[in-house]
Length: 208
Image 1 (cartoon, helix red, strand yellow):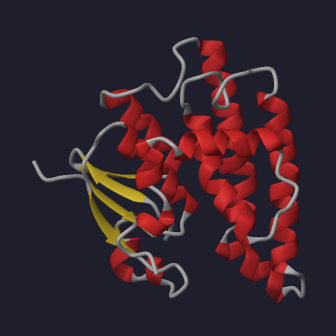
Image 2 (tube, helix red, strand yellow):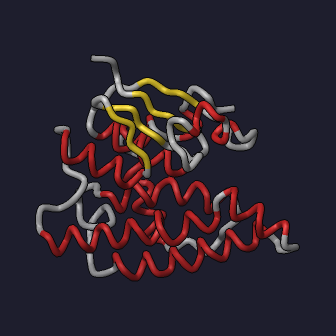
């Protein structure tokens, strides 16, 4: 059986999430890269893979999966390695909620498509992105506050950490200064792990 193929882009935070999960699960994979700045994700060839024209997409087990959280949960349910969601249903809900603050509420409204539309309407796209991230991080920090430990929910990496670290890269790109201290501490703990380090944007074959 051929290795999984990750369709992504080194600067895509959603692709970054999937790279982290693949590394944590010890899954070896190949890369197919698309420059989002040049619009390669909207080519007919890629639209045949993912009609949304978004990365990532993962070709694995004879199927193509899209949407980073769906991909990560599939990997968690079908492959060994450290679990990325708690077994307790209530804690699973808390972790998913925190992850979705980033993946559903912050990231989609500061991606390239939306920033282009903000700019087309005469707005300051960078200021828009920075405000969205700051507000989202404040809520995220409050949601994880009851849960102590090295990571978002104790001393085990979860889906919430996988979403947080790539979003912090975006935050710095847009000049966000108001990053809660605990989020920075969690980031440092994550990046000390080989799986997170290997998944960094600058460590990808298409990085420039």
